[in-house]
Length: 265
Image (tube, rainbow, N blue to C red; front, top):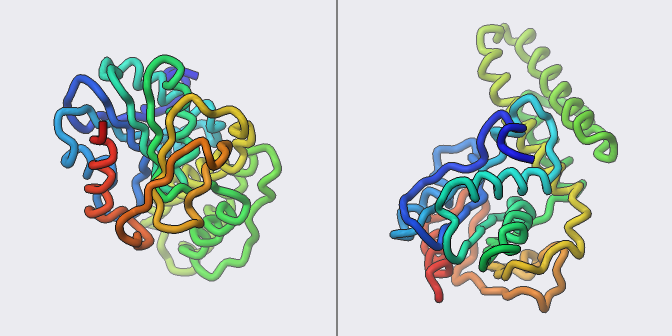
């Protein structure tokens, strides 16, 4: 899969530099908090920092893209950037870990690569359904169930989106909010893209046994976030974070610690 197959690009270059690039998979939350990639672009000097964010592509005409295809498109863009020299670090936070692993392993076939996974999480049925319920609750006290996740993925994502649109239509009719439907539509598309990404991670069963070329380090503050899907425990390093991490956006102190990890020889 190449960039020509997608509506939007995956990568945004945030800083200059010619070697030892850093790719950061982080997705724009519905907040004004700075993203990890943005903080690293300020904390790490002289090295190109790239932000990986496939939600734009998943918000386009394709409702669903399998994780290996997402990773391949990201790798294709990166190799075209001209800033792919030296040792590459691919950083993933929480649910972006599976995508980061895929990208790192593809790149590792031709260069030294380290995947740095921060508090890694591996989306499953429970997480996808939990997020669906959370987003649905934004439109009122709806009680509709999440669609069956085992169906055709594009159909599943379309069904999720339709539930949201039905609830927004009802909300707008009850509260005379017809003039704000555009804002609701943008929000629904963002929810759809994020759920499509989580579903792609949940469906990525081929990752089992398909990894092993990239070095992998896990940064964790809890035994519950040291597992790496597809790898045995002796195949990667675990570094304990020096402070417990709050839920939500990454705090500057964690970004500074991550910056030290990617600067180690």
